[in-house]
Amino acid sequence: MGLRIFVDLTAIAVSGGVFVVPLYAIIQQRSDEAARARTIASMNIMNALFMTGAAGVTALLLAIGFRTPDLYLVLGILSVGVALYICRLLPQDTLRMLARIVLRLLYRVEVRIGLPNVQDTAAPMVLTRCIATDDLESGQAFFVLSDNPLKNCELVDYQPTGDTATYRILCQGPNMGSAVAVFDTTDRSYHGTINMNMGGKNMTMSETQVGKRIGDCH
Image (cartoon, rainbow, N blue to C red):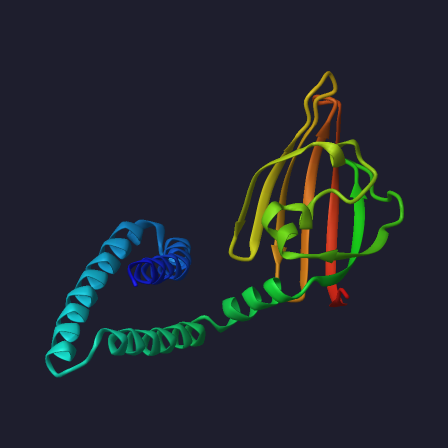
């Protein structure tokens, strides 16, 4: 019995972390920078009030005859209700999360190379590629696609924030290269530009990618 209670409490703690941490991240991302500290402080106050209220309700339920299993049942039902309410508040985020977990998405991507002061370069390269959840988390979804030395270099400072992803590329060695990139995404498309500097300051170019979802990978 003691082991079962330990496992149950551990599962509740882990589930609470999975539930709460993304909510904190959303609040920090979407709150105004000047009011972010006050927003988090207000949220902590609300958490304390709800915990105090929950303790009072628990004591009342025990006083009227509820058993411990009954309390966990009530807690589970209330948690499902809160989760559904949050999904209603953030429907786009919920659907996007489910799509990224369940699906590997197939995109048609047009890749164009740009050179300074050159109006016409080579014809765009068109390809299809699958993008999975791991690609979005690692940055490989928006990495260099053309035949370019930077394709084999290290991606650093990858930061997906809302509908925007930014990162840098660094190449070591005598012909050190670097790049900065910004990509904007929607539910069905993405576009962005990788501005590259190769061989120190001797050569600059850019790679623009425009991807459109055309289906699901099988």
